[in-house]
Length: 181
Image 1 (cartoon, rainbow, N blue to C red):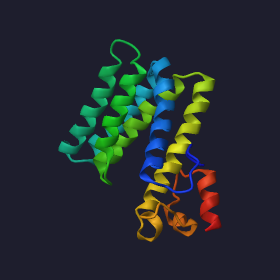
Image 2: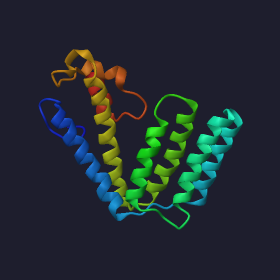
Image 3: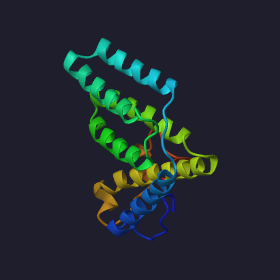
């Protein structure tokens, strides 16, 4: 129930239904709302690039600079469409995977873009995004729990297995379930 699907087992179909339902919220919100960046966003991105140039090898810093320029280029003619934001965000997410310095910096650039996107929507849409983000975080935690040997193959998650998976960004509901375990 914590990610939009009420089911007795966490089957592949249930997980796919949750992804589709949460994705539909993002699609709906960003189909109506273009994304605009402001001067503060640009300055944050410049700070991320400056830190990369100071702290990384030239090759790694160049990757971060290219991604910052890529984001900035999207806004040359004004706000970008919500659909383009979603695509760009997904591409940046792929680049930020892994626990390395470049991935971390690209993740920070993506966070600036996300902040701009969330600021670009009205109150009702912002509330819908906040709820969708919570549901997404819950779903990702459950996906990680399903990868564990005990229970995952049967579509069940033992509450005790949630505690090690609850990390920064987890929701109150997921922390409560983990405490029960």
